[in-house]
Image (cartoon, rainbow, N blue to C red; front, top):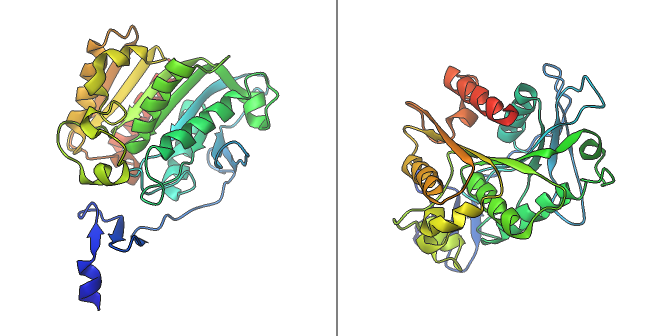
Length: 303
């Protein structure tokens, strides 16, 4: 029976198996996502809490220790990675990382939830992320449903950020902002950490979870396929973070070069960490290179 089961299943990312899909359509997840509750971190003073809204999926908010209640601090809308298929704002990985980011950079963070493939095929993740971005923007007049955003967020200093697949979504949210606009909100920067973009090579996973896409010719997946469109990035600064041994390194560099050639009038920088692989800063956040990367990110957010 086990042999027959194996023969009827497709396993995606064999080196890092996430799910099996059977011929009858059944999906078996191989990596369930652990979650942790929000907290008041005693070491940093960072508070976190979860939101609920009829207009978007739940998100987790992070607020650094407030010393001046009247001051407004930069706001980072962060979108997690996981190949569009795994992870969550509520996982220990992202909870711990964004607690550290809020503390080190003294920023407020909204950690975005989106529905995952393969149960929910792309582009639904883009739609979910945009709904949360608009929900955040609904607080610009200080009368929204979330008091932390009303009281502490500086809507003149908003950043979109993400890692891996989340960086892909963050880029696409920036492009959509340039088209649709966010009244009263100034998004000043885009932070892309080990971004997941396609090139001209086939990608079995993306082909499966994004069946309506033209793949390497789709600017959502391969921004370099429409270089002139990149001039519409709705911010003035971009930081691309790459890692020397990351299997996506060349795609991050291609994105950086495409933006530079696009005619976009902002400033784009790239920071490459030698000797490290994909999102190493999440798996080993206390190593010196992860600390250096955190310092680079903090500097970008506070420049």
